[in-house]
Image (cartoon, rainbow, N blue to C red; front, side, top):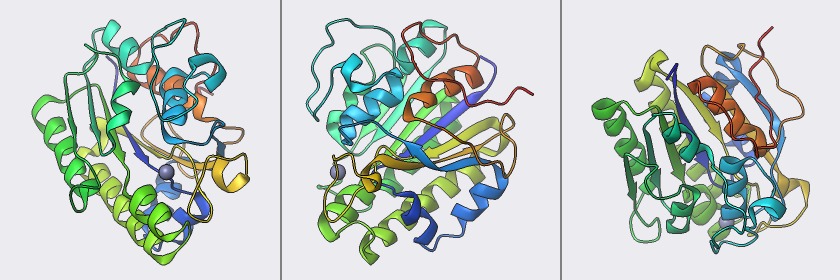
Length: 260
Ligand SMILES: [Zn+2]
C-alpha cells in the first residue's frame, strides 16, 4: 500500500451550512487542500443509496439500493472496502447509524464500531475517538468515519440551516480537525457528505438535497484548488488511487488526483 486514507462523512452537511457553521476549520480545509462546494450526489438523496454510490462508484440504478433498506445486489461486484482488502490492505469503519454496516461486505474490515446516535449523546465525538485509537494501534490503510448527528439531531430535529443544525455540524467539523491534527501526514484526510437537505427532510432532486461539499487534505492535492465537475461516484476511484490499489472495472467515477 502506498498511502493511507481516512474518509469522513458528515451526514446531511450542505456546502452553505459548512461555510456558515462558524467553524474556522472549514476555511482552513479550503486553504490547505483541494475542495469543491458543488459536488453532486445521487438520487434518491438518501443516506444508504448515496453511501452505496460513494463506495461502489455507480448510481443507484446499478447498485440497486434505492431506499435505506439493504438488498443483496443482483449483479454483485467489489466496492472500495473489498477492493482494498483484495490487494492486501486493512480497513476500519466507525459509524453512528446501523444500516450503514452494509456498505462493506463481510470479511473486508479489520475492525469496526457502531453506536446509535439516538441512544447516546455526542456519538460523533465518541466515534472520532474510536477511529483515532484504531489508527494509533493498528494503522489501517483505510478508515471510514461516519458521523450522523448533523442529519439526525440537526436537520431532521430542527431543520436544515437552523442554528441547532449548524452547531451540531460545527462539532462534527471539530472532529475532522482533531483527526487532521492527529494523523499528520500519515493519512490523506477527505471530508464530505452523502446529501444535503431542506426544511426537515431530504431525498428529492432539489439542489439543496443534491449538492455536497468535499475537502481533500493530503500530498496528492494542490492547496487552495477548487475542483470542478465532481460526483460522489469519484470518491472510490480517488481513494483507490491514493492507496495504490486498482479500481474495480464496474466503477463509473473518475479519480480526482491531478497528475500534471
Ligand atoms: Zn436524513
